[in-house]
Length: 241
Ligand code: HEC
Image (cartoon, rainbow, N blue to C red; front, side, top):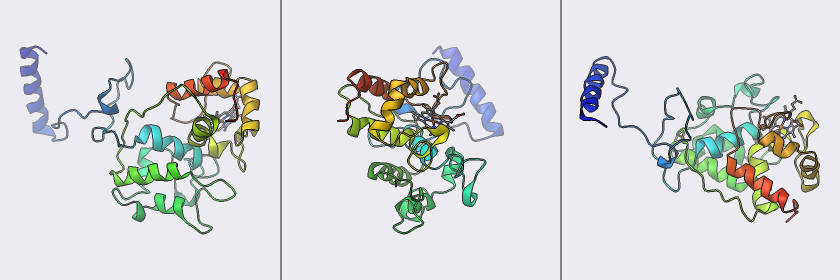
């Protein structure tokens, strides 16, 4: 940057300081410091939160999809349904249900680890997986910030049980599970999933392709690498491995 620009910036910063103190910190690294795609977040302020480290849970990629697919759907904790007054569809609404740093004193974590009938999601829906629960626990422990960190993802050597099933559970489960089937679509087993492989709608909806409904339908979009995992699994014959 040119020195004159810096001087000008310093002058402007002082000017702003006179009015408010909220713009005085250094820019926060988001996405682990990896540059955003051109045009991403255009016109929006950077997502707040501390810099990412290897162990940082990404709210955007790991927590929000689970919340939307397993809690924030119609009939449960969507904006309109607000069961028990609880909405779980975005950072602000999810943040209300947690005490940063203390999972065991957070309604959100307590509800997904209940041993009795109060467990969420309610039966007969499947409970969240251990890795989903641990991600939510660790995210709360780390301060429940609106983190947007790069999550490691390899698109090769895809396995149904190790890769595809967890991905469906993260992004689609509650809306297309055994007890709740939006649009009549059930994605709870290999056999069921094959039907949507066959008609192209599994990938079409994930890719937001024309003539398919974009899925998940909310403010969450599957990362390109995850969609590629699904495509590579299908290219390998969609095995039940
Ligand atoms: C928050 C709830 C929700 C989540 C999460 C969700 N869906 Fe859907 N899905 C719906 C609803 C609602 C419909 C029916 C919409 C309609 O018929 O207007 C639907 C319809 C569909 C359809 C049929 C529509 C078509 O274009 O043929 C497919 C296929 C589908 N979803 C796949 C998925 C996949 C794959 C995922 C995960 C990546 C997913 N959905 C995640 C709510 C959800």
